[in-house]
Amino acid sequence: MQAVFLPWLHMHQPLIWLDDKLVSNLEKMILSSDSRESWDGRLIARAYKNPAKYVEMLKKSGYEPRIALDFSGILLESLQELEERGFLDKVEVGGEKVGGVIAYYKKVLKRYPECIEFAGTAYAHSYFPVIPKEDYALQVEEWRNVFSCLFGENALKRVKGFWLPEMGVPKHEENLKELIRVLREQGYEWCILPLQAVEGYERMSYTQRIETIIKPWRVSCGGEEIKVVFRAPTYFLDQQAGMSAEEVYSKCLEAGKLADERPALVITASDGENGNVMMNEFFPQFYKKFFEEKVDEKIGSMLISEFLEKFYPEELEEIKLKSLGASWIDGHTLWVEGSRRERMIKRLYELSEKFHSFHAVDEKTKKLFLIAETSCYNYWGTDFWFNQGERTIQAVLERFKKLGE
Image 1: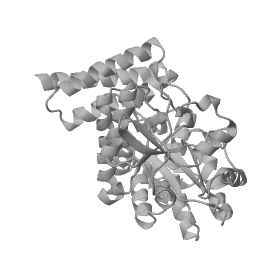
Image 2: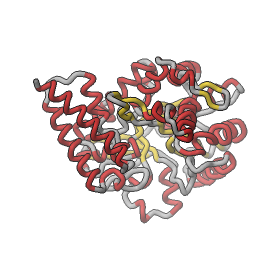
Image 3: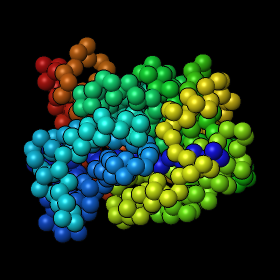
């Protein structure tokens, strides 16, 4: 085998305020009076189900599909809540009802655990470079609580990798050290990073960049260390813009020529629900065809944890990360720049300090506090999303006030 290919889909949907209740943005979209928004909501709901659906379809046809997934904790909870209400039973796309997404994954994971690798992530899709390091453990732990409640302890034991929301790598050494410490303490063996996080990335040649992404490495910081794998850059393979099975096969062969005696590891990663390609084309036009026609003795597919265990059980070579950190869109601009973003971040730090001053906090208050750190509220840079974040902060402060009474 010359190369191992694995696609990764990141899934997230923020919570928004409807009247005095937080609901999934997915529900708001589907119920929208705007026909385009409502239709997109239906397509997104189907996109959340597609990985399990196509894995089951391909397995039943005698093929061996593989995929890596991560769902934010608040999305997992939202899908479960919508399922319990029967909401998704009424959502139909192309004559097929979406139905219970979580129930479907439970069934597929039980039957075909070798096909899907779930990775952990932050509960509320918080962007680690802009939240207090004191909250890292809370975000990581709460996701694990949600996943365990939905899928069980045995399923959680198989979760060995981690997805940083927006692939955000903290820029200060003490923050990176704390993040690695938290991940290792909570059972994670590896995480996936953007190539842009590597020190000297800008000076690398194209060949050096590909040589870097096709094997695992070790990141050390302040005595803490973790294994890392890299997302293939979009100029090599752009999953969200659309890939053909033939193109992926060809690129994997190219990567294989740069590998040592072990196969090259090629991971394409993107949002799993944004845009026409991911909502409509990825699974029927690429994923199904690749696993039906392109997997052979040269190009295979394997879950990341399985790949690491089989080909890299020994000590890994160390790689240095940039001191300024990175994200999958290079830097941190869209989370930190602008007066309103700066005010939001300042308020979140103040909120965190207040939260940690309490000796005991009830579960509802803790979750609402973590939800206030959702990256979307700052990222999109519009009044609507800023208002959602500010209203959540205010709701947390009201609960704090009751705790202090």
